[in-house]
Length: 286
Length: 330
Picture 1 (spheres, one colour):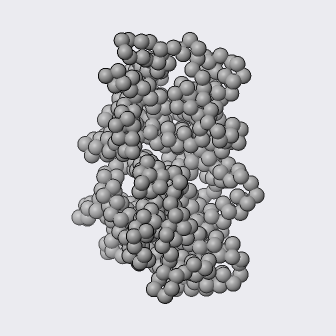
Picture 2 (cartoon, one colour):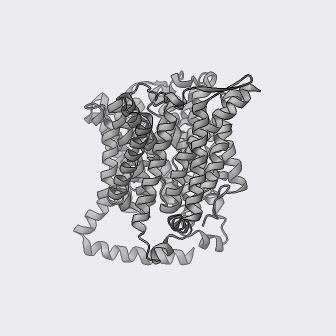
Picture 3 (cartoon, helix red, strand yellow):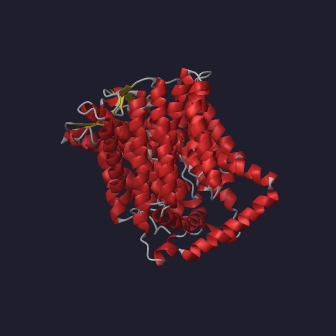
């Protein structure tokens, strides 16, 4: 029982990390119609930035903010300079973002080497809560709380604010939004930067849990793509539920069927696709 | 058609003459290029003729190479092993494709990517079968019925022959009635539906043929490299073959093969000078996207149309009229 609930917490914590990165991926895909293959590398680069600042004795919170700002700025540069030129051109987008993953990941390898790094758990979260025979690490609880907080924030943002309405409209009908006189270019840059910052948040918070190593960007990208497929394009609610599902299945799968954890995740995706090809909360795909 | 025959003839001569010009290293490189050309042509088939952009094609390549490696320790017949890997990868493509083609373009891209990573994870995790991260040595040698082929020159000729066979097969395939319907589905799905064809069947046919050919190239790679590892199924490899297809030119048969040649050549050439090949490749890709227009094959076409502007104009008109006529007869 005690192991079960600790696994549950771990699964939820991983799920929240996937949610943070998938939320950015899904909104970029939903609004801008771009599969950002470089999203995983934004996660990676943010971990490295935070790691560097923290090893220079910058505090955890400051490092978190700096890393998020850094990835957001990187996102703005990428969108303004490159992605802007390939809207509506599917193959060019794939080629471009794939090229970016190589550039960013190889540069990171150049700067930080291939050895594994970890971000230390911040001191004030480096404890555990004991309930009976169960010991819960506070940091994992913290990640779950941040994830739930973000979900609430996104829900409020999407359904109660003007920008949220523009974004929702953008997912449904992009041309109509621009016909209404809204500066779509600015919205796109904002969405991309926001998505990048969320990947950054996930990267820093994931540092103490999964560590930082070359190749993790691919793993996290694939998992978050699966989350997006399960949840549905452009749906934050779908990403939230999909991410929790994947986080739990992965964690328990690793305990019960160590060789087939990826297979179970994949089968879940296939089942969802057969029942609802547009994903759990996706709108009908045209 | 006559011009195509001439090109084919020149290619054949070039393939046959190559070993007399280059060193042993060059022969090895040429053999690898031939294998990758088959792989790229298989992906080029679904990308250029069926409009399906897959980022998980290395899965089939991996199935092919692991099949010859794993079965090769029990069985030594070259033809049976190759046939086995073609059939197996084709079957896997048929089964998975039946699910994947239900979805539209972005979903298809993401799902094929996830499928590729599934195989990647399985090759890591099923250590008893695949050797895990250490990979596996292939135990059987290439034997077409007249003795073992082990010299680089012999291997090169086998690979070059295979690449030419695949090219000829694909030519027949895309010009066959089924191939034309597949292209018709890509251009206008509802029209083909209205004409009474089931688009799914034809998409699935293209995907299965493509998967089987990718498996074929993978099995050849097993014989070439004598060693297989999980990296062969990684999505980065799928991405690389997609690069080959795109830089060569989507929508042509020979373009992907040329793209494969250029990619493998550059990779080997630049890697001898620097470890930063991935960085350089990424930069080249970004530059290509920003300045390039539709792959090398189309650059040639652009160049030609600039030189022979009037003539190509006429030819375009003729082609358009011809295409319309063909549509009517179809």
